Image 1 (cartoon, one colour):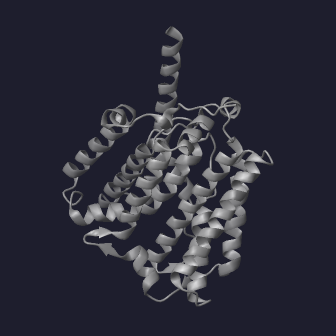
Image 2 (image 1 turned 135 degrees about the vertical axis):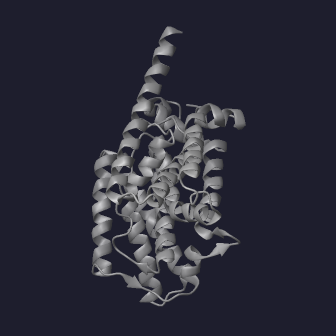
Image 3 (image 1 turned 90 degrees about the horizontal axis):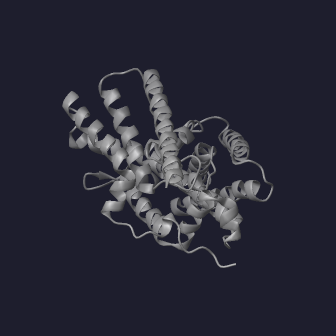
Length: 331
């Protein structure tokens, strides 16, 4: 059968479309930004803006991959473990095995693609629910990382590797530059290619997509490979910036990535959402954390605030879907 040609991913994108889809989250972000600037004069400084970009770039990379996964109607709980495994693996290869920095990074990224494909295969071929499959992978990869490092940080000397995640281009931190490049590439893939249309089709209606000629299994596997790859990039950059491969990094990263997607308007049921919304959602969560830090708010209270924001975001998404359903019925 002929593959479907029209889907959300095939629309011609312009500024008006972006504002229609992401207007709510964008308005919320601007409002929070303005309030933060008024409440604390230290917030709206160049140094603090660069700090927000640097500290949230790694989360954004994870969230971009998570967006692809959620758009297909699935979930990936293993992104934090991908960060840890690939980051620590890179550290070990450089510090203990003497492998060149770029070769070590390349090997770690290949590992991420393989385990990403494994996630996809568990879900599509063995029919294991995504929640269970990625939960298992999360534990396996986390355990493997502790075995590799013996639960101890892997320290490496300053040099090329540390400059990759800790360097600057002008006033802009390199992780923020990588974030922008990754966003541009993934946005084009999602909005201007057949593969992007297939992602929306799979998330919108898996059975209909299959009958329309979409290879749904291959689409889901590739999406999980992308998620694993982006998480690995995030972990490598984070460890490069920290200066040591710590087996505890990445813990809770999956929650931050999911939160960025949900706050950005990506529907947990799949088939609806944008990468731009995820970027804004990630920056919004970063701004909230930053202003709470500047105000001296306890980190435990910050977790409560984030949890409330996630619940409200999901509830708003439910209301939006209910409203859309009722409107379509009336028509």
